Image 1 (cartoon, rainbow, N blue to C red):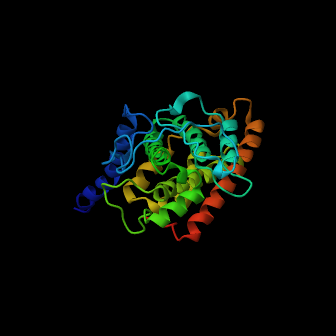
Image 2: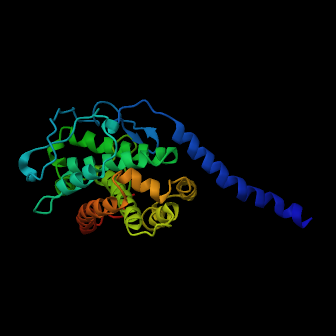
Amino acid sequence: MGALAWGGPRLCRLLLPLGVFFLLLYFSSLRLHLPHSACLWGGRPCPWSGEAPPGQEAEKVSPGPLSTQAPDAGPTAKPPGSPFQEHRFQIQRLMRAFKASLTPSGQILLWEYLSGWKELIKFMDSLGAAFGLVSRETQSKIGIMEQHQSGEHGHHYRTVQSMVAFELARGLVGFQSLPEDQPPSGCRTLLRLHRALKWLELFLHKLSTSRKDGAPSQMCAEAYREALAPYHRWWVRQAVALAFLALPSRQELYRLLCPEGEHQGQALLLGALGSISQVYNITQEVFASHQMLDLP
């Protein structure tokens, strides 16, 4: 009787994580034939997903090269439609993008910031199909930011600081909630990217300082629990925990990061992490100063 009484609950506890895992693999195997700027929110097409958010007409803006120009140099938002996979992941390009996003005066240039994120997406894509869902969710948020940048008020989305000031003045942040028929604010969207950036920063830092027998799956899980897990529902936490088990070995990760070898890879990784950390810390201060770290 005891075995029968406990058989059902035990079987459920066994099958539920497996079901979540296979569900994740299913969604990861899907190929959404959308441009990377196509708007997705919560895994679904945005209600306003036209050429531009409601009340805004698309404004074509010519992109410029990565630079550290002053914010008043005008918007340099990259137009929607540029492919994410134009090149393979290169850690040097990642480092240049985040370094260029920080001006001498401490402004964070959004176009350069998003360019750095596109390199991180290439890195995540190289980790296998289990990270496909995470990658697409990140792409959707970048698409939302680029729609803001190319819209009627695009010049206000040149830097993190100018975006925050504009959306606060217009009451666009949505401290409590946001109607489903309105585009997510730039502040709320950037906050999601900001949290995910901390996760990847912690993971890559653990990798750069790890022993040769270190397990990337454990490093990634620890970074996730610290940076992102508090903001995710139970089923998401279970799914990503299982996805981490599919991570490549430490040696394979270093080959992805730097084909020239682990020693050079560690130096490049630490350099990139220095730039990412600076950008993260300044963005954190901006959000904290306006009580926006817990936006819904």
